[in-house]
Image (cartoon, rainbow, N blue to C red; front, side, top):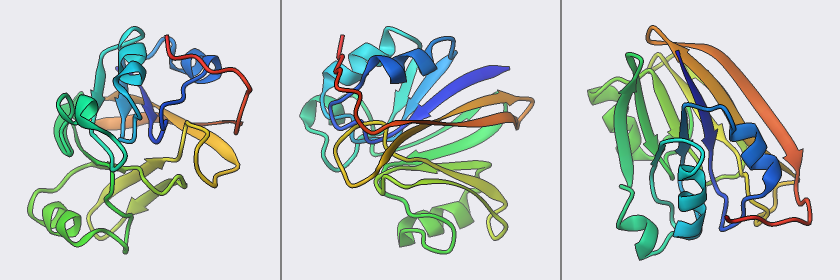
Length: 171
């Protein structure tokens, strides 16, 4: 079993509340808009990090992380991209890829809106973990914790945090 902390849209902000929820994770997955490499460096101190770059990320992030990432975790096929849409509203290139190369879990960020939706058309789960940072119009910061075993999501937990704690930590 692999315990995963899934987040997106930190926009160069990570605080102790987010870090506490990621403690004990075997892997951390970041779905873009890190902000700067200081955020990815801090996350790597907790657990191995997989991620994709987002539209606000500069060269420091884009030189380390791809735009799109496909991988397997415990036999579960995963696809991650920052701007991908969601069931019935996918970006056209994502819709084409999901049809051509099926996946079990499709993860996107960008909207700052938490979504956990099963897509019957592509027979996959879509997760947007919302926004863990403080920039944007969202009222509640969110992240998702998953447990993956035997090609299945064994547990999915949504974590809600106040929008701004007043304390910023990047390392």
